[in-house]
Amino acid sequence: MTPDERITTNGLRLTTPRKKILSIFSSQAHPISFEEYALLDTTIDKSTFYRNMQTFEAAEIIQGIESDEGKRYFELSEKQHPHFICQYCHTITCLDEAPIPNLSGYRINSITYKGQCPLCSDI
Amino acid sequence: MTPDERITTNGLRLTTPRKKILSIFSSQAHPISFEEYALLDTTIDKSTFYRNMQTFEAAEIIQGIESDEGKRYFELSEKQHPHFICQYCHTITCLDEAPIPNLSGYRINSITYKGQCPLCSDI
DNA sequence: GCTTATATGCAACCTGGTTGCATTAGAATG
DNA sequence: CATTCTAATGCAACCAGGTTGCATATAAGC
Ligand SMILES: [Zn+2]
Ligand SMILES: [Zn+2]
Ligand SMILES: [Zn+2]
Ligand SMILES: [Zn+2]
Image (cartoon, rainbow over all chains, first blue to last red; front, top):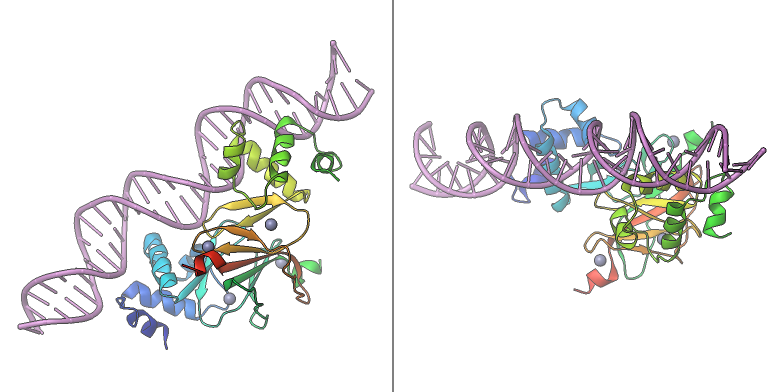
């Protein structure tokens, strides 16, 4: 299913801002914040962006994660994977291969590791 | 080492607000936010609290974690353990027994799971 | 007790994110 | 294709968690 199809199958309107949002997120290798998104789409309105993030999270099209700096980062929620947030360089890495453990009784939707990334360990 | 000793061994002054902060955190079973802390210590000043959280995090006396609601929660950093944040009731649970996996190249300081807690699954 | 640097308390500020509301524009209908 | 109706946008004003500047207070060392 293409991102645009994910919009319509959820009964949402396929508007110009939404198409642009999904096309930009489709080309990202990491989660990005509004600040970073706005560099790639200079016409976006802040409230349109955040309202769509909420709508898309509810429709499970987009997934949000909290950084260690009090910001929210977003990515397409395609294949479930953990993230690593470096507390030194603040980079967010998708850990595509890392396993998702089992916690009996809990349903896990996301996993976030924080610590020191390989690049910051080398210094 | 008692919490108070952890202050002095870091070259920090043992002030009245700091003693109270550590005594209150010593009696918590979960991480708490400033909002919750302020209910237990009605004399605390917001900036004194947050400045001490930064100082204590640097001294590794306190550990902070980001909730799913854009707030920071804090707890004494005694034994390392993962946390589970329920996206429905927003409770933060300490997973004292959960294992901490190995990610080669990365140094892991904290693990946060998000999803649905057992209580919210039963409804 | 006196000195000095650190920590506190208050108010003002910053920033990421939300809300109210008038306007626009998808989508469905005929 | 024009009409209608409701969802979504765009702007400005707002909100809340957290930070900062600065004058005052107070630990700690002598
Ligand atoms: Zn790093
Ligand atoms: Zn990812
Ligand atoms: Zn719950
Ligand atoms: Zn804990």
